[in-house]
Length: 281
Ligand SMILES: [Zn+2]
Image 1 (cartoon, rainbow, N blue to C red):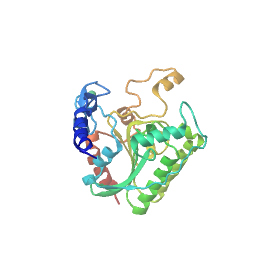
Image 2 (image 1 turned 90 degrees about the vertical axis):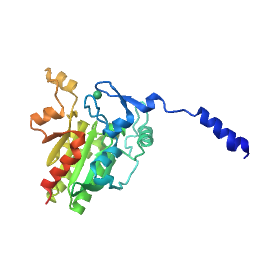
Image 3 (image 1 turned 120 degrees about the vertical axis):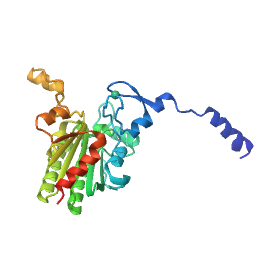
Image 4 (image 1 turned 180 degrees about the vertical axis):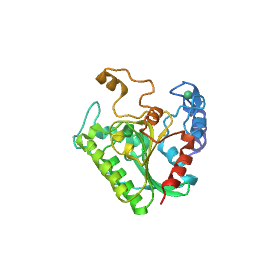
C-alpha cells in the first residue's frame, strides 16, 4: 500500500464511476407509457400517478404496506431441490431456479409471514411474481400448507396474496399435486374455524386460480387485476365466440358474483383490517 493505491486510485475511480443513468431513475407505465420517477413510483406503491395502473409490486414493499408499523416475522420454510423430471427446455430447470434465486434473493416463489393488520394478528402467504412468474411447485404448496398450520396453531386468520401464472410445469405432475394439497389445507382451516381471506392481484391464473385462490371465505381483488384460468384467446378459439373487452378483470368478476370486493392497492391494508374485524372470533 502506498499513496498511489490509498489516495490516487480511489480519486481516479470516483471520477470514472458510473453515475445513475436516466434508465436507473425512470421507468415507463406499462399502460399509459408515461415516464415515472422510480422513487415516486415506489412511494406510490407502484401505482401509476397518471392512469392509476397497478404495476408489479415487489414482495418486500407489499409486506411493508400490509403489516402495521412495518413489523412482521418471516416464517422459515424448509427447501429441497425438487427436479423430478430433470427438466430441460431452452435451459435446465435447475439453472432457471438458480437465476431466479439470484434475481429475487429468495429460495422459491412463496413467502410466509406473521404480523398484525389493524388490530388482528394474521399469517400471510404471498407469491412472488418475480420468481418464475409466481408459479406453484412443491415448495409453494408446502409453504401454503405450513402457513395454514401456523394460522391454526396461532388461532388467527390466514390471508393469501396471489400473483401467479399457475402450476410450475417444470415439476410436471408434482406441481399439479399442489392443487389438491392446497385445497386440503384450506379445508383444514375450515375445520378449525380459521377465517381465510384470499387477495387476488395481477395476474392470478392457471392452477393457482383453480385451487386455493378462489376458495377464500372472503375474496378481494386488486383493482384492474387479470384473473382467470385459461387465457382469453384460448377460450375464444375454443368456444368460437368473441368475449367482452373487460373479460377476466377483477371488475368483471365482481359484477358476475365471483368475488366479494375490488380494492385499490392504497386501500388494501384498511379494507383488510375492516374485513378482519368482522371475521374475528
Ligand atoms: Zn399509467
